[in-house]
Image (cartoon, rainbow, N blue to C red; front, side):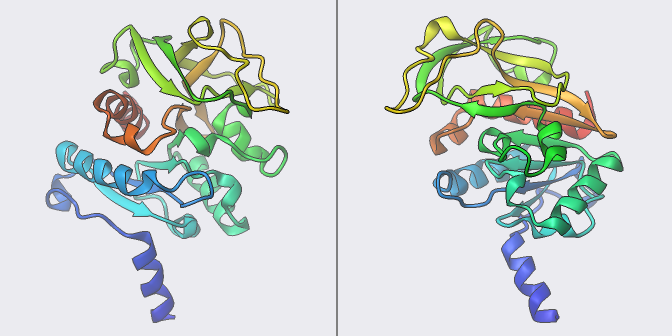
Length: 251
């Protein structure tokens, strides 16, 4: 048993805290699982998160697998699913995440973590608030603020030129979300996609970031963040940190 616990601790990879525990604002858990489509970003993102932890005095736990969700998550002000979808969770991990949110925990869902196989875990689909449909080829577009009062927008201009995968969404569970950022489909080609696939766009109402209340907690979602180099971009990190900060403290 001791060997098993030691191995799990190594896999979780707790990052050093910037100051004594008494001086940190809060603790967050970041889950960044290497997958077929997303793995190059991990060392870049981890380095940036460790810098954010030192700069903003929060305690960071970095996990490569979701074992932590089987334990006590109550110490975390928020959990961040960084390109790591709940579809990878086993039954015990799902139950642990549900307990955490029902007890007032908070979640941040980033890019690939939005995607979950329809019907696999409806609770997770409702937590995210929207379901992934498809995305065209990565293109440059203009992102606009839907809610300039949200901290995830404070470091951004009113019109932000950004290159990403512009996910298209559906709302099969009828979840009401509050858009934070929209993408202007007039500034890219929503139909530009690989042979055999069809993307039509979503029209004027195309959020790429949002928030909502779920169970007894807060959920912040951003579809942005496809490439590893994005985790060195100051504006993207301002957006991401603003969302995490809001999820953790609620203002």
